[in-house]
Amino acid sequence: MAFRLLVRRVCGVSVRDLQRLPAGVSCSSSFSSCLNTSQPFLSRSLPHLLPLTSCRSVSFNVQDQDDFTERVINSQLPVLIDFHAQWCGPCKILGPRLEKAIAKQKGRVAMAKVDIDEHTDLAIEYGVSAVPTVIAMRGGDVIDQFVGIKDEDQLDSFVQKLIG
Image (cartoon, rainbow, N blue to C red):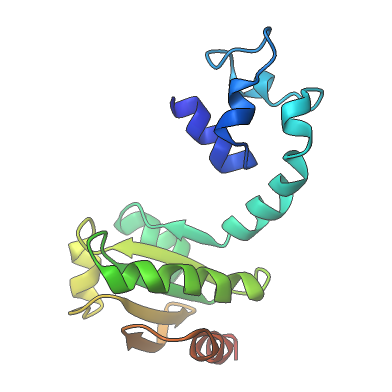
């Protein structure tokens, strides 16, 4: 089951495609053997793999304080920090909008996602009292921030201000 979810997420392969695996390929085999490009069920999905991975490389979930320091504070790129919570409805609306605004920048800005329930210390450190809160940071310094939902044009302007 976990293998199927991983392949679906990474390659964009549907459940029906996975059910049509050739007899010699099972889901218990290694990941690399299942990603053999000679397999017809993946051949149409693999072109989507490269753009997908390049877009996702600028967006990441913060794991702990050290990860935050390394990937946000010490980042060479400007970083948008999305403080959110799983239970927050507006966060679920804003998240995809932020990802879209970041993707438009083609690698010039990174986005860190911080779950305030898992990383309360970071939320307190940056004065987050409501979610969603988005903080723009460049070179370890806070440039700007906002609380709540913004439309796509406002988000694009916010990101442009961060880039300078």
